Image (cartoon, rainbow, N blue to C red; front, side, top):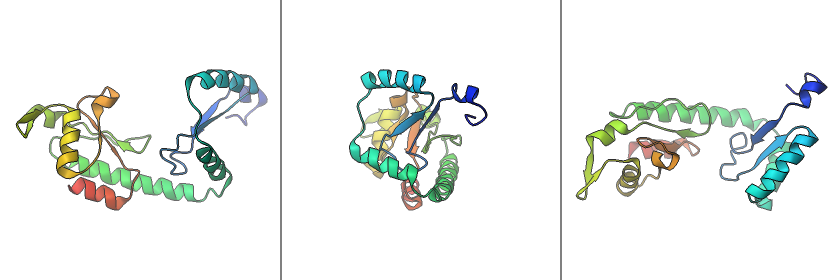
Length: 173
């Protein structure tokens, strides 16, 4: 969009990060590009609201952005394959429904039907996503995040930013 005209370029802000495109999950590096006036204003706010990323992450991000870009499509295809597989497998489990995510590398299945039925474990009734995620961790040794951490009780968050082998193993458990 910014290449259309100088007038439009002055109004465009591009915000992005390296996590998905360069498989740098957890590095927490983002960037913004825009007019000098807007970026200076953003810097004033950002400087007082967040801490700085470590220098290694910054250098690695610069190398990723300036390096060969031919692996991006390969990674996108791999993530797409993992996403489709995970969603398909989750939807095959009775009591779970999962929409196909359109953004990050997380599936967010609805497990409220399972919670409504209730699961008893060690004399305790599991009826929320926190207890269910702990149950799955203890019994299946699979780590996932309860939806309650995102104000979404009745859901779980699973990452597919790992190998297909690990995804299959985790879902089989």
